[in-house]
Length: 187
Image (tube, rainbow, N blue to C red):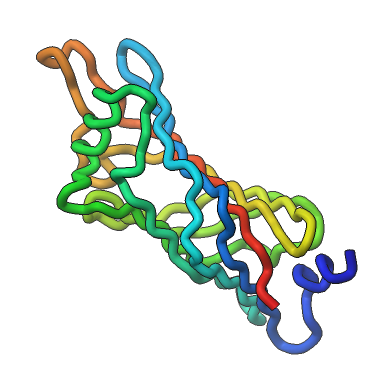
């Protein structure tokens, strides 16, 4: 337990830092709706060995690191919907969805906590900055689960929501994006 606490507790001196490597088992889910029904599309088992870092300075808490997801990995559990989402997100021209972490409103502690932070989401060649609500849950062996969520719109990224059957089925502009990353502290 002392090892876990030492990874998350402020270090004496001017600044503190934590570095995490992304472990197997992360996911990204997009939830939306049409005028007919709801849909959910996800990328499961994200595990690129990206590193996220958190630095406390006297003025703020910076968070750095990037996550790059392959748009072709989205699965809507329906072949037609999956193909439509990939086409709508311009997967051929812009094969990656990126999340760049910028900051947090407080330094992560040893207990479960809710924090807010700023990220830049790049989708279909357009980058936008958003505030994200996070939950940080410490686990065993210097691990944490970082979950985040944010409501966005297709139009935030200059994307026209898909329509089918001559416009009889229309996808709503609003989407909820949820991600979960499993992180292990680096020594």
